[in-house]
Image 1: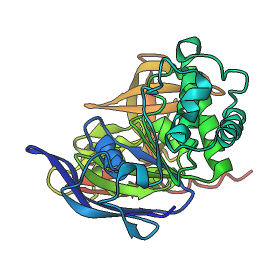
Image 2: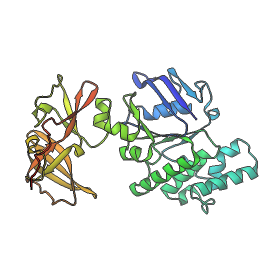
Image 3: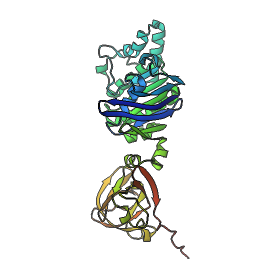
Image 4: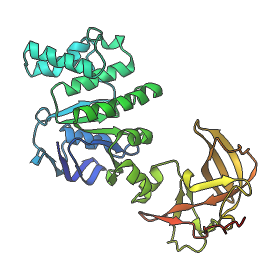
Length: 354
């Protein structure tokens, strides 16, 4: 199912929840709708589902304008973050609910429910009730119920929010495989960056009701188009005066410009560990955090604090240790734009003659 949204607006009193949003989604894509709390994600999802009416703008599904089409006629499945299962119904009846409402035959309902039980890994649980299931199992029931009527579009509102971290990671992998297998166009709301990056084919980044950027996770991370996206995606440090950093003194900055520096842009080590010494400066390690695959360093350079990574294969640095810090690149943030700037002092080291 191809989705097109044109100039969508929605206000609640004086609050504009959706502000002139336009985008297209190709058939079969799994889209992550990502942004801070209150940014308009859930409102946008509810408008697509027909649960909210836009003040202006148009929604097209496979070329047909659906603004005035009832929710149940849009061919959309909806998965809520709190499962919304019927406590008095067992797993089979919860999955079959939408089919029963459509007055399908008992044999057809039975075949479809058994198909979904196998698809979602719930075979053997069909006679259990929601209070007899784990959080992950309840969410799988919610997925199966949404898929039962064979919708053309699946909408998921923070589907993993009520599940613990380990199960949430397992369900993310399962969901991506499931969506790829059945080929249904899907949009899921999340405020979890790791979740969006891991699961989504594309991301829509929204804040204050506006669409900031659309693209693949890699594209958005490596080429942020706005100041908000550059600062929101990734674990970045903000520097108020980028001209104070070694190598960036002569770069032209606009009034009020700031810099956003990601950990992978920063190299920290002892003397002789850092290439391009003329582009580096002195710093001090304030904190060291073990992050499993690497160490995360909190490094002080003058009045600035930066985050950097260090491999576990390297000798650990200690809090309070004097170090050399090389900033390879940064994003200069001016008004609403984000521009990557390479450290111009980085030059190839002189060759070593043996």
